[in-house]
Image (cartoon, rainbow, N blue to C red; front, side):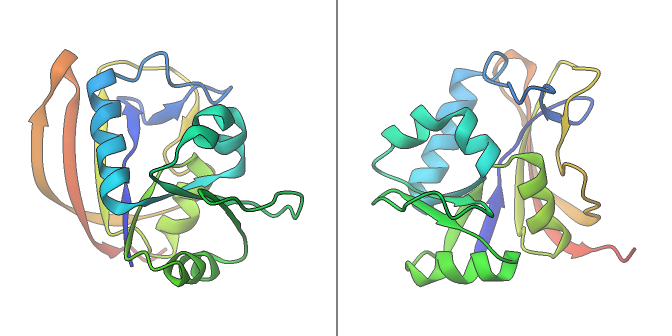
Length: 174
């Protein structure tokens, strides 16, 4: 399965502030490109905290199946929301059981780190925003993902956003 991580990230490496908020600085054009990629793949993966923070947005989607990583049994699946748990491999197997061959990894940091540190991220499409937060949620949360990347493309988009596409070539050993 191909897993494409598409983070919007600040120059100092944060995907959100300490409260998990990022929509105030995400550009509409970048958001549209992210949503187009999700529609192309048909699926995305998010953590429970990210889902709960933006629940109304996820609940309204009908053209994408969102897989929510959680350790809780209190949630029930719907047509477009699937609650999954276990190891990263267990979750990938579950997503594949629905017939998906590629998915977008949408975060948050802990979920990004979980999939990256076991080698399940194949591509990273990073939108690097020209701002710093000083503190916030790191790209890989508290996890230690060490990836070797090959730059595939780079462009400066609207408002000075640097959009880099990387192929993950290997994981570095600890």
